[in-house]
Image (cartoon, rainbow, N blue to C red; front, side):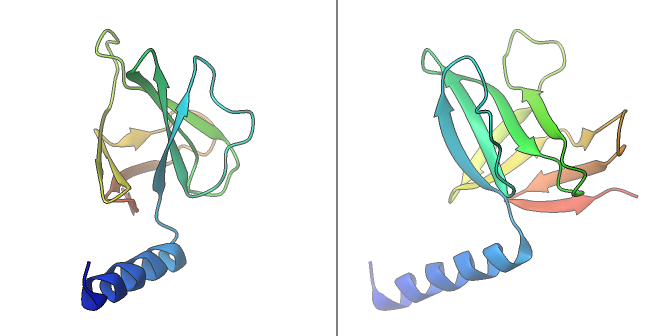
Length: 113
């Protein structure tokens, strides 16, 4: 890796941190971790297959959101990861609590009005 690439990636990581972007972290097992850290989207993997994406709601309400990634699930999300930055499809729309509606694209939260 050249010095320019190293500086560019470091700068991008620093800007992402200040913006509050999500970073994807893998966890193995059939239960999400007890403590979920802000700005972390946890891809849950069991028997080599991703089955859920878990994160704290980005609105700041403190609620944990668990989204199914299982192909067997009727309501499921697709998770793509590029440079450790997650993209979820479709949008996340909470129908209880804070009622947040947002997209996660390349780690950034895009709010829907």
